[in-house]
Length: 83
Ligand SMILES: [Zn+2]
Image 1 (cartoon, rainbow, N blue to C red):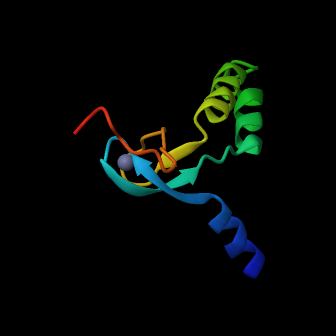
Image 2 (cartoon, rainbow, N blue to C red):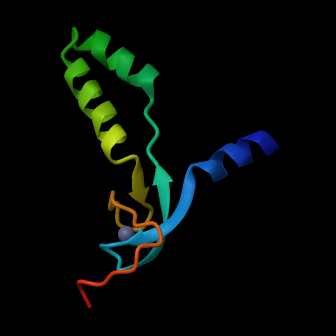
């Protein structure tokens, strides 16, 4: 139980959200590979394209703002260009 809690905590960070214009909780994207594998088999490999796209998306933007879904957390960067 303690291990589960620790794992969940690891997938959550606090960072500045550009959309909310406020510090928000960001959650790490989790991919259900088993579900995608099943979908790929059902669609005769067609879903594999979506699967790859989702995996690439996670590589580029692994974090999601809990509040608005924004994918670009800013870590301790002060905003200078916009007021
Ligand atoms: Zn946000």
